[in-house]
View 1 (cartoon, rainbow, N blue to C red):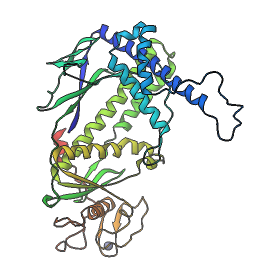
View 2: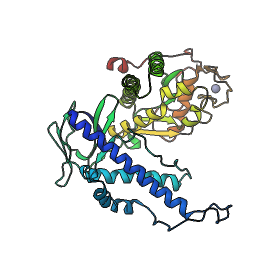
View 3: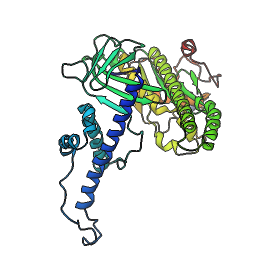
Length: 419
Ligand SMILES: [Zn+2]
């Protein structure tokens, strides 16, 4: 099992200067290496519908540049530019590896036929993270002893260990990165074992979750959690600061100060959101053994008019966190096709056409419930086919067909307790 723990660092001003210089040097190197690759590409290709006379290479065709040739050239770079001798060698290789990855993502389609964009030339400040691929091993460049992180070529940096490294985990790599409010170190931790997932016949409780804009999610029991609108609340402040920012001279001291304030606010909102996602995930995982969710086309939805709200709730990030929490706690999750889940009746299966504005599902069979609740029941039905769970898939026989409750909004009590 892999985990990532992030800690704040307390570097000295001299160490910050070193880190920033490294960023600049690696950025120059990235740009050089990218140009080398692009140059090779331009000189060896002619478009299919062009006369080769137009784009015939001039001069000697350079050798193909790939990770290996570029990594071999590092030695020469250090001879020509002695500053590069001050950077830990593995960090330079990691820099080239990142470029290689971006390059391949651009040229080679993945199994879905999708490719990434062309790798970009980096502007000042774009490279602000460095990876030490080995930690605490004899040949490693990084050692964590107590709350001191010893980095080769930089020295000892104090780590604010707000929680200890979990028992039995080995630190695989360390990445130092800069954020608006300081420098951080992320450790990748590995434990050889993987927690056993619950076997299917041991599932005692299951639920479906329907995510929406009105409510963050609704479970198949009819419980719902409200959308925390951090971003919208922070918007007024953000807009004010951005207005001030526009009046400052770009690049001036005051501009930089204010730009940092804006960046911090964004960081704050992102952290609030993440915390909320973890709270909800833990609440769900504590309550159920199996959680069925809908596979959404979030990118498609985010292009519509609802974009801000959709990005605000960011279900994609939530679903990822929820699945990670489930793996860690040995519970199960399942994504199902959401087509028709909001239209079909969860009790009789009949189609009940409704627009987005209609919030209540009212079927001729007598079932009248909240539309999100109906979807959640449908999702559960779809995901729990063949499972030995009592009461799965709509209402039980013992329950009255006509459900008087049309809108249930129980806020999850644990979440309030956590606050
Ligand atoms: Zn019905």
